[in-house]
Image (cartoon, rainbow, N blue to C red; front, side, top):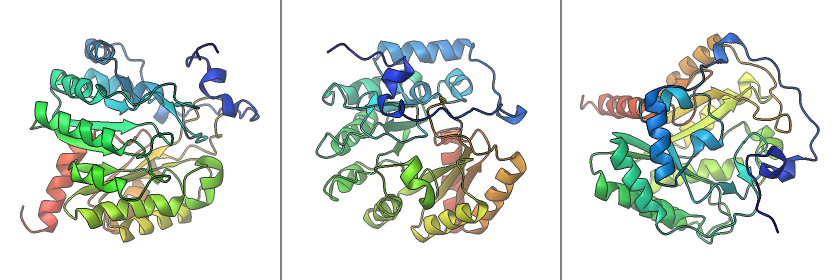
Length: 319
């Protein structure tokens, strides 16, 4: 069997090829960004390739890659580049991963973090339903490796849902003590069958609630995309659900369609609407909210973490 070329959309997303094409609407002015050309971007790119690392910035086609990489910020994606899920919004390659987990990967990630001199790092992953613990131990090893080499760096993880694993695997990740535990709900529950097949809304919500039960001091974070077909009432209900699970930090960003075979963009939400969502979320008790068209889970994550920590100190009367 020939090796897949993941740069070709039909081979990158074989399960989506039967879907009809959805027209991609013209992006409004507030969505457009400049192509990355800076020296900082090139330096970050070089370090990623030298360490044979995958980034979600590239794999998911993030619009902020130029800005973030020019500042030496990158979100590293562990456990390979092929995901065992087939979410209709996502540009990461799907299918059966061709390789086992790489035992040397945590060390390479830690080396890159040290080389980049990061104050705050975000580590995410593909879903690995083919691995018994869903990659929980790989996350834990990566956190510990970064701590050894860069003890001053704060660590944020963006995890899968571990839905097919023993519930105890979550404890492995929490015991490694990341500073922020992020797991995205992605959308409103009514859109899950179409947007996030294989996942369950209340399982994801409960995962984040369990993190707080295991370690009440750990910051929890989650995000949704808008423009998928949800309505304002649905978004507000997700906020309520998140606060009931004691989630500290909410991100809301515009969904952008990677290819015509992906879920269609229902509409482009205006900057004013994002501002209104931000105000509503703060009123519901989130310690930190990022709600803009270009917000992504790890966009300005370091600055936001500092604000999040400060907000908690104020809430506890320690600031």
